[in-house]
Image (cartoon, rainbow, N blue to C red; front, side, top):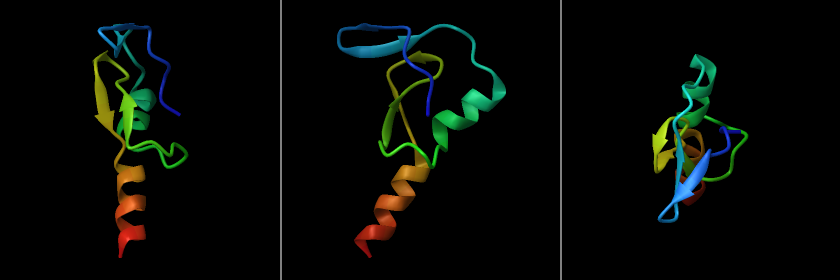
Length: 61
């Protein structure tokens, strides 16, 4: 699962703590997470979880 956001501003999650390498990878490819849009591991906003996106696209076929 992606790291929890440090806080929220205008409804968007943010996290300014520097992530470890494994956390950066988990942010964009996390097969255990069901959500396609997950809070960024570093910065402000959301990022795409490509593992969840791939799973959803396979279901459509």
